[in-house]
View 1 (cartoon, helix red, strand yellow):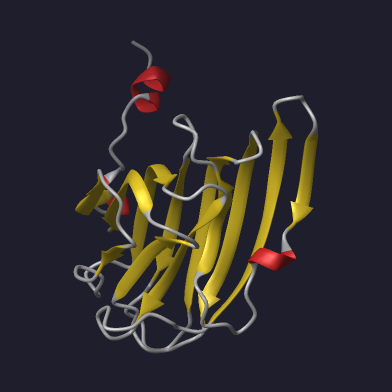
View 2 (view 1 turned 135 degrees about the vertical axis):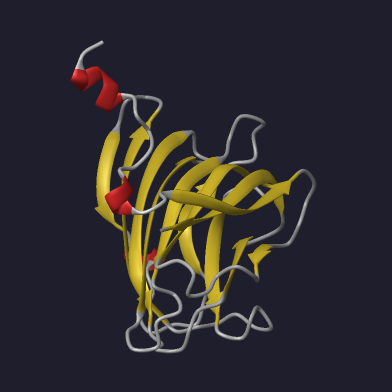
Length: 196
């Protein structure tokens, strides 16, 4: 086996990069819940946290997966966010598009941030993606986040969403909450990892 092949299939990071991903919590949703929260484990142990969304299926058709942060361990959610949102679309009839989605971004708002929008409720429709939260325990800088996700839209198209922004606070973010913009999360899995 060549050196190139050995490196290509070695999924462990070199020791100089630390310990890689550490799974901290898995929220598995098998029946309708209003939200899915992570209220422990977000602290100064890791500089970066990664949330993986796997087949998030809404109970209500044409609704959005959203998130917000907390500075008080999840007692309340509503940290001020400024963000941007753009997406690429591909319909089943082969029509495509790419657009800035100003109606889904936030400007100094305490609302929940839309990640993927208009997810369908057909049995085969869902959303999956990754959300990075950087240095949530830092008390000097704002807290940046980046989301990249894909969904099967209620209008039968693929939506590839790009969302990025920051929590405009120097307080530590120590909890996050995920919910649909309307109705329950019907099923799916959300995993939280620490990145060393």
